[in-house]
Length: 118
Image 1 (cartoon, one colour):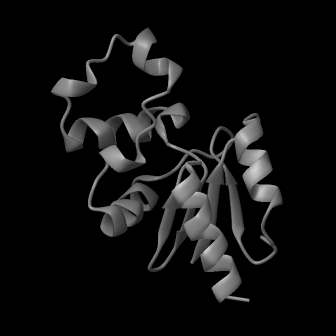
Image 2 (cartoon, helix red, strand yellow):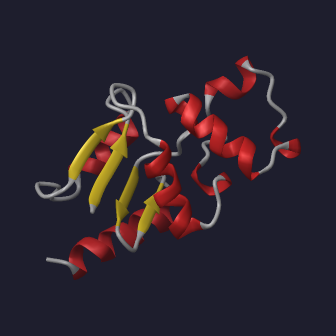
């Protein structure tokens, strides 16, 4: 499995995606085709944390008046499945690895993954 979960309207996602050869990756625009429970669980299998997948910058947090400090793993999972903006993005998922978000360390790890698998 090689999937990329991204948002087309996200400039950061587009910049990151442009850096890599994604010809043999399944591209999933999460607004048009939301992530499934099976996909969230596959991500969780690698991270052991729904919170790690959760974007704390989602505009939905304020709109829904969510208190993240009181939330547990089941709450994060439910929200990830409920609205696409809760997924930290982009997410690159393989059978054994996951690369979540746009922080510098993640992009370095992603670059190393692509350089090692060419």
